[in-house]
Length: 348
Ligand code: SAH
Image 1 (cartoon, rainbow, N blue to C red):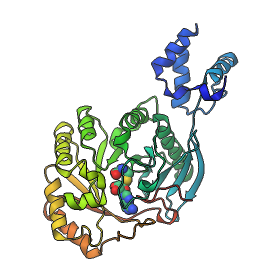
Image 2: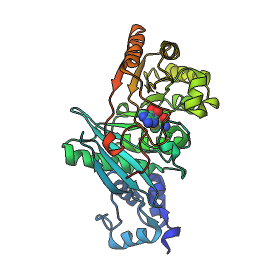
Image 3: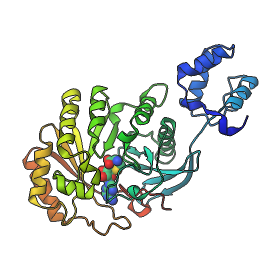
Image 4: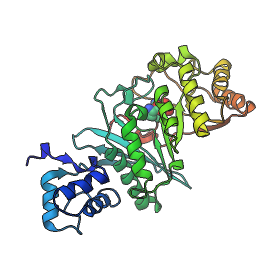
């Protein structure tokens, strides 16, 4: 059979695999064995499934492929950050990043090739080609980083952030399926509390997350709490204006009681005034919130954007703290290898 028509076996659920074996006149539990190889043991070939007979392995290879990702290129930053260029089965490339600190190793993973949104300060938004990643392609990035964490830092991966390429809530089903695998004991068994999904703010999908009572954390890339400014830097804001986003977040908090994190870059002449900081407070004070003031990472063609002064950052910190909102000032990691927020664009 030609490879083109073979199905990706990792698109099948455990039950579908069990049924497949039953239909072949074999035992359903073979499906469990294969499932374990594919997910717990991350097998890259049917050959490797040594508790199956040779005939069974050949039969699987005749019917299916295992579309594993391949780490094409690994770059290490002088601050320890590792960036992986991941080649997908159709030769498209995404990036994922390992960020080590003294107490944690965080994986920053991609959810789409390119991005469906158009934030003007983000390098990923400039990429044309776009498709959603499949659940296994997201899961594999996490496995690859977990392996690197064990190899280079002698400890397993501790946290995951969906802050790589793409808008996770525009690939909702696949991201949730991947998180199911990551948190399931049959996959990596990680606690959902150590996973953060970061979104530019798609109100309908935030409501859906709330309805499903997901246990992972939510971060929102806000960057401005004033509609006209937000629309000028994140044009999709005209479709999903702040009032809708705010209502969806209120709904999220009412259902989950989970604190919301806001990501926010302060740019000179764009959002560095007292009234910008006041608008941020007014936007997020309805629920326990945390604001991460992240550093701007310059991108090509990003001349309109310049990191604001320390005085502007101090203004934000004081305003937020005075209003009882937790705030942290984040320094970028991995800038020298274009691995920092907003710099992922397959440049090598
Ligand atoms: N689409 C999702 C996740 C990917 S972006 C989201 O928007 O949240 C991850 C974070 O990097 C977001 O907060 C985004 O606003 C920020 N970001 C994008 N470009 C950046 C840049 N050039 N410098 C600093 N942060 C940037």
